[in-house]
Image 1 (cartoon, rainbow, N blue to C red):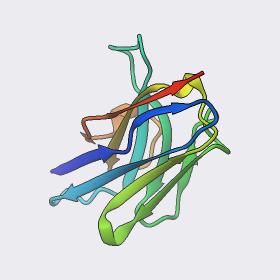
Image 2 (image 1 turned 30 degrees about the horizontal axis):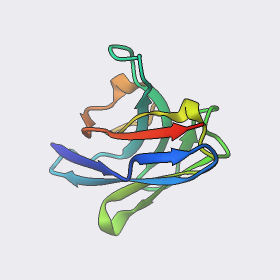
Image 3 (image 1 turned 180 degrees about the vertical axis):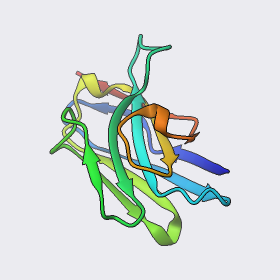
Length: 125
Protein backbone atom coordinates (compact mmCIF):
# COMPACT_ATOMS: atom_id res chain seq x y z
CA UNK A 1 0.00 0.00 0.00
CA UNK A 2 1.17 3.54 -0.79
CA UNK A 3 -0.16 6.78 0.62
CA UNK A 4 0.51 9.89 -1.44
CA UNK A 5 -0.07 13.44 -0.31
CA UNK A 6 0.31 16.35 -2.73
CA UNK A 7 0.81 19.98 -1.83
CA UNK A 8 1.87 23.22 -3.44
CA UNK A 9 -1.01 24.06 -5.73
CA UNK A 10 -2.50 27.51 -5.95
CA UNK A 11 -3.31 30.50 -8.13
CA UNK A 12 -0.58 32.03 -10.28
CA UNK A 13 -0.46 34.42 -13.21
CA UNK A 14 0.62 33.26 -16.65
CA UNK A 15 4.39 33.16 -16.85
CA UNK A 16 4.72 32.43 -13.16
CA UNK A 17 6.02 29.38 -11.31
CA UNK A 18 4.84 26.84 -8.76
CA UNK A 19 6.42 23.80 -7.16
CA UNK A 20 4.30 20.79 -6.30
CA UNK A 21 5.36 18.20 -3.75
CA UNK A 22 4.27 14.61 -3.28
CA UNK A 23 5.14 12.87 -0.03
CA UNK A 24 5.01 9.09 -0.31
CA UNK A 25 4.54 6.49 2.41
CA UNK A 26 5.23 3.12 0.80
CA UNK A 27 4.29 0.06 2.81
CA UNK A 28 5.50 -3.07 1.05
CA UNK A 29 4.49 -1.97 -2.44
CA UNK A 30 8.02 -0.97 -3.44
CA UNK A 31 7.02 1.55 -6.07
CA UNK A 32 9.75 2.00 -8.66
CA UNK A 33 8.22 4.97 -10.45
CA UNK A 34 6.46 8.15 -9.42
CA UNK A 35 4.54 10.31 -11.85
CA UNK A 36 2.45 13.43 -12.14
CA UNK A 37 -0.80 13.50 -14.07
CA UNK A 38 -3.39 16.21 -14.45
CA UNK A 39 -7.02 16.68 -15.34
CA UNK A 40 -8.18 20.00 -16.66
CA UNK A 41 -11.55 21.71 -16.10
CA UNK A 42 -14.46 20.16 -17.93
CA UNK A 43 -12.60 16.87 -18.33
CA UNK A 44 -14.12 15.00 -15.42
CA UNK A 45 -14.64 11.39 -16.34
CA UNK A 46 -11.83 11.47 -18.91
CA UNK A 47 -8.46 9.84 -18.43
CA UNK A 48 -5.90 11.89 -16.58
CA UNK A 49 -3.22 13.44 -18.80
CA UNK A 50 0.37 12.35 -18.28
CA UNK A 51 2.75 15.15 -17.25
CA UNK A 52 6.03 13.59 -16.09
CA UNK A 53 7.54 10.53 -14.43
CA UNK A 54 10.70 9.69 -12.56
CA UNK A 55 12.16 6.42 -11.40
CA UNK A 56 13.31 6.33 -7.77
CA UNK A 57 16.63 5.08 -9.09
CA UNK A 58 16.71 8.19 -11.32
CA UNK A 59 17.63 6.14 -14.35
CA UNK A 60 14.56 7.35 -16.19
CA UNK A 61 12.75 10.66 -16.50
CA UNK A 62 10.05 11.38 -19.08
CA UNK A 63 7.93 14.43 -19.88
CA UNK A 64 4.90 15.02 -22.03
CA UNK A 65 5.56 17.22 -25.03
CA UNK A 66 3.22 19.88 -23.63
CA UNK A 67 5.42 20.54 -20.58
CA UNK A 68 8.89 19.65 -21.83
CA UNK A 69 11.30 22.53 -21.27
CA UNK A 70 8.98 24.21 -18.74
CA UNK A 71 8.45 21.59 -16.02
CA UNK A 72 11.08 19.66 -14.08
CA UNK A 73 10.46 16.53 -12.06
CA UNK A 74 12.85 15.64 -9.25
CA UNK A 75 13.00 13.58 -6.09
CA UNK A 76 14.47 13.40 -2.62
CA UNK A 77 14.90 9.75 -1.72
CA UNK A 78 15.70 10.55 1.91
CA UNK A 79 12.37 12.34 2.27
CA UNK A 80 10.42 9.96 0.00
CA UNK A 81 9.21 13.05 -1.82
CA UNK A 82 8.82 13.85 -5.50
CA UNK A 83 8.61 17.41 -6.81
CA UNK A 84 7.28 19.07 -9.92
CA UNK A 85 8.79 22.48 -10.62
CA UNK A 86 6.51 24.30 -13.04
CA UNK A 87 7.86 27.38 -14.79
CA UNK A 88 6.43 29.66 -17.47
CA UNK A 89 2.93 28.48 -16.61
CA UNK A 90 0.15 28.94 -19.14
CA UNK A 91 -3.63 29.14 -18.66
CA UNK A 92 -3.93 25.73 -20.35
CA UNK A 93 -1.87 24.25 -17.48
CA UNK A 94 -4.85 24.88 -15.19
CA UNK A 95 -5.82 21.50 -13.76
CA UNK A 96 -5.93 19.29 -10.72
CA UNK A 97 -2.49 17.68 -10.50
CA UNK A 98 -2.20 14.15 -9.18
CA UNK A 99 0.78 12.21 -7.93
CA UNK A 100 0.82 8.48 -8.68
CA UNK A 101 2.93 5.41 -7.95
CA UNK A 102 3.65 2.33 -10.04
CA UNK A 103 6.06 -0.58 -10.28
CA UNK A 104 6.86 0.09 -13.94
CA UNK A 105 7.26 3.34 -15.90
CA UNK A 106 4.49 4.28 -18.29
CA UNK A 107 2.67 7.42 -19.46
CA UNK A 108 -0.64 5.55 -19.16
CA UNK A 109 -2.67 6.28 -16.06
CA UNK A 110 -3.96 2.71 -15.94
CA UNK A 111 -0.47 1.52 -15.08
CA UNK A 112 -0.53 3.34 -11.74
CA UNK A 113 -1.91 1.63 -8.67
CA UNK A 114 -1.90 4.44 -6.14
CA UNK A 115 -2.98 8.06 -6.41
CA UNK A 116 -2.96 11.14 -4.26
CA UNK A 117 -6.00 13.30 -3.67
CA UNK A 118 -4.85 15.97 -6.12
CA UNK A 119 -3.88 19.62 -5.80
CA UNK A 120 -5.44 22.41 -7.85
CA UNK A 121 -3.29 24.66 -10.00
CA UNK A 122 -5.00 27.68 -11.54
CA UNK A 123 -3.16 29.87 -14.04
CA UNK A 124 -4.77 33.20 -14.83
CA UNK A 125 -4.18 35.04 -18.09
